[in-house]
Amino acid sequence: MGFIKEFKEFAMKGNVMDLAVGVIIGAAFGKIVTSVVEDLIMPIVNRLIPGGTWQTITFHGLKVGHFAGTVVDFVIVALSVFLMVKALNSLKKEEAAAPAPTPEPSSTDKLLMEIRDSLKK
Image 1 (cartoon, rainbow, N blue to C red):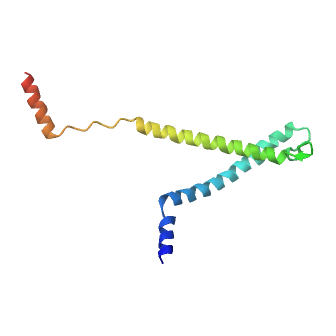
Image 2 (image 1 turned 45 degrees about the vertical axis):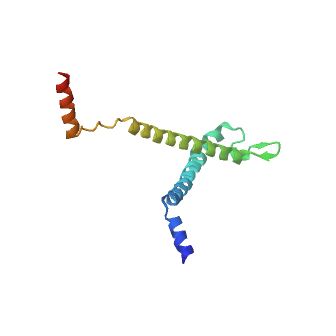
């Protein structure tokens, strides 16, 4: 029973759950980006290619069309993640930039300041 309890504690840690959520969202995001590339970007590229479709592009007998689509996928994902992280970092900087309000002096501190001020006079 010790092994099962230990595994349960490990699996329920916040970091493991956060990672699982990140992987699931990342997989879904990857599908969205692939759809954007295949359904929106590559049809425009196909019109610019003399052969008519990017999947038929060959270079010295190597079929590089599908690879080119995968590279475009990667660039879009990397750019999207970069922009998302940049936006989150700017939000964190705004939170950190807001100065904390200065605490009100305690009654003892106020009394000591009054005594100090009266002694200066």
